[in-house]
Length: 60
Image (cartoon, rainbow, N blue to C red; front, top):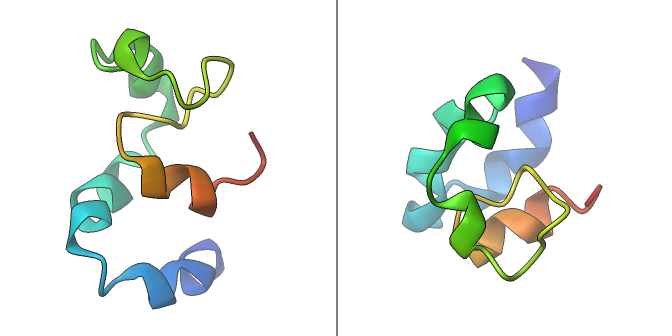
């Protein structure tokens, strides 16, 4: 669970909480209908619709 440790400071951000369980489910992200409506990072499969998620996954 070490990968989740760096996200601990984000826990207070309630909008991100629902996204945490999705992070490990990467294969499901590409199917998400929300992806197309995410202008923040078109080439990033980690961007469901939450702008804050981009700050977490700076690997984009």
